[in-house]
Amino acid sequence: MRSVFKLAMLLLATTVIVDKVQAQGGGGGPPNFMALIDTDKDGKVSQAEYTAFAEQRWGRLSQGADKVKVADLQGFQANALAGIAPDANGEVTKAAYLAAQPAKFKAADTNGDGSLSEAELMASFPRRGGGGGN
Ligand SMILES: [Ca+2]
Image 1 (cartoon, rainbow, N blue to C red):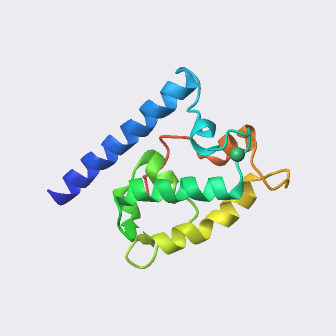
Image 2: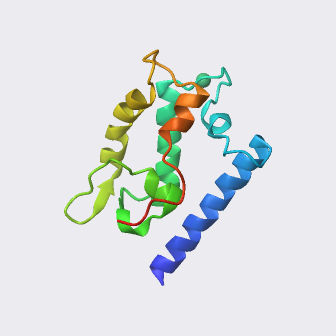
C-alpha cells in the first residue's frame, strides 16, 4: 500500500509540474522548462539556477527522503537520475544526486560560456517516456 501511495504522490507531483509548464508554455510545444528554471528571467540558466531546480526536483521525486530506489521511478522522474550510478541496493542518495549536478551542468553547457541557453537546456533533458525500464 505504501508504494501505491508513493506512486500516486509522484503522479500528482508530475501532473502539477506539467500543468505549470503547459500554462507557461502555451501548450502544444515542448514543455517550457526554461520558464521554471530561469528564475531571474534573464534568458539563460546559471549553475545556481540549475542546482536550485535540481534540488526542487529531488524533493518531488524522493518525497523528501534522503535516497530513492531507481526502480520506483518512471519517465521524467527516472530521467532525473540518468547517469548516476545507484548503490548496491539500487538506490541513489540525495548527496550522490546533488554531487552529479555540476558535471551535468557542464555537459549541458556545450559552448562553455558558463550558462545554459534554452536550446542547451532542452537538449540536456532526455526525451520523455523512455526511462524507467532498467
Ligand atoms: Ca537566469
